[in-house]
Image (cartoon, rainbow, N blue to C red; front, side, top):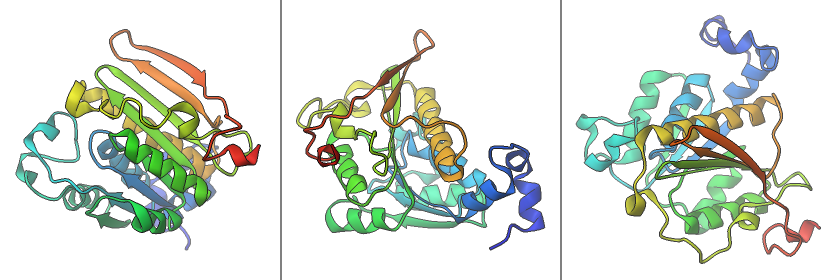
Length: 251
């Protein structure tokens, strides 16, 4: 499928970038991306991916829109209260870009459904809010060799990491976190400043676009840490644990 004249005009600011150009935008329009969780992180991530022209977006979330979501989940408004999140988010994305294919999955992704969904996409954005889900998504992504862009935000702190199973030097999410720890560390129990989720979700969208187009540098396992109170960024490298039960077999 060739890019149309309308698309050339619409995505002109992307195409002007030598790291993207026409070929990169073509790859974006053909890409298949799963946004797992369309809350605080998934809302801005999905909106920017839709605006960028990602051709096939799968939105997965089992929740309905609640009043407490509106403080940070910018895909929704007061008229969407009680609607299913994936349907409401789909409405917002279609208003941004009606040319892309959007598939809402209004249930929790786990087991065979998670495996089937991950197998059918190119990249997974983990925008969920609990470690149990993150561990399962990490396992399935490594099982199916799908790049995983993981984001998190709590209180005033955010973090983002990229894990690439195809690369021998890439750790996985479980190398960084051990199962059974901090399972109650989420926004519902600890709070979060609203715009922080926009920062992290937008960066997840950037990393996805870089993975699709091959632009820039992506260091597998490098974790960026953001402190919104001090406006400082730090970077740390997650080591690949050779005895990790998920990715250790590659050692």
